[in-house]
Length: 248
Length: 71
Image (tube, rainbow over all chains, first blue to last red; front, side, top):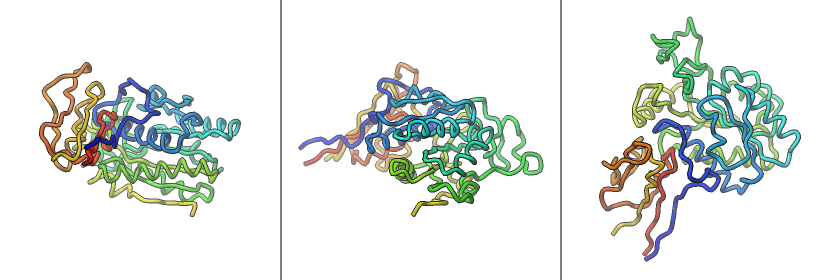
């Protein structure tokens, strides 16, 4: 009788570090998936990440790869610069919805429109996390936030933006998909999508974006398991999972 | 006969309970212990782990290591 280790902490996850994320935060799962993919592709020494502003601003403390911090929303612009001067490196951005879909909307649209050979991991949790639960561009209609305490009203606040669908209308970007980390079965698919997005860059195919539906138990005011249930029942009907664009 | 075993890296666990909900054979629970951060780490409280690694797949803090026992 012998034992085989089937799961261990990823090597590109910083050793002996505990993240600052709230218990049950989807960021931890998404970070771990990115680490696992970097390990599997063997690109730990050739990867440069670009950190956003938001809860994930301190991602460079958790991932044992090179990292660069970008001003709020400007991660795709910084990544474009990095990839231009070091085309041999794998450059990716990790951004939240307050970063990518709000202040950084211009940068992401133009980076996608140029078909830059970068990978974008976009975490959509329908709220501003770090700053205290304000309404994000992706907040659902009727969802409460500190800046829309009665729930988001389309007449006042407009409609939640489906970033993936919008970017998929552009001709240049190659791979655009939406996944979630709500349950193990979705997490396995999410990892495949992230791996594909990195693989595309390794092969020089062009722009890849993976939108990850995630939770914010603290600002949603829910327990972690409840939060993921709410994600499945409320967010997934508005933000359907699937590939919106693919190279093939 | 147990088919698997987990090892909880207690210093990283934040007792979010996602693994408890994800475990298909329901052998996990939040323990009574307290770790250095003040969270109650998760523990395997009965036999029957099948080594499927669903708990590790869902753990946001990579606090679970999974072993499969081979005959």
